[in-house]
Image 1 (cartoon, protein in one colour):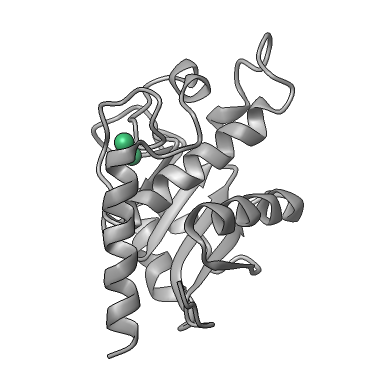
Image 2: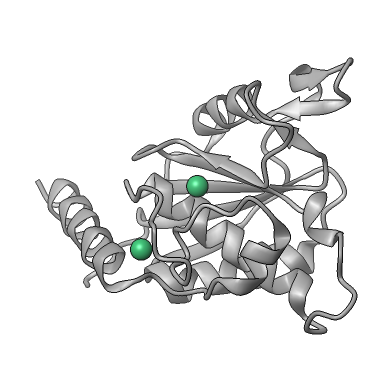
Length: 188
Ligand SMILES: [Zn+2]
Ligand SMILES: [Zn+2]
């Protein structure tokens, strides 16, 4: 694909997230989606999304704000945060994305649990997988029944650890369709 500088995936930390982690995730996203990635300073303050009773942050308004705050060159924007995220119908989420939209977020909060007896780099792998999964939604990918596929919906960390960091053949075709569409609209 012939990519231009306006095809950039922006990665932005929110809260206490190490830059090295953002850079690492950016690299994975570049490999997986073929776009250049750019790590920038925190784009938004998410205090407004705190639910005092739940002591968690509502992810939906966060990604809405993120989409607006993203620089013009951003094809997509992914925030990485250390706070616990929720949507009202669930106890927590590992992340959320705008389906076919611009913004996504992933949280490291729950991915740090249960690291005993799993691979030494399990934490990094989980973040990578969840970042690719959420970005996948912004490229219109839906949840996939294939347990191995990165677009499989995970209820637990076991599910996350079990799935691969790859798209199944079906999801790969769907992704390529959306990438083609993006290419065409940019050249109009
Ligand atoms: Zn999902
Ligand atoms: Zn799939």
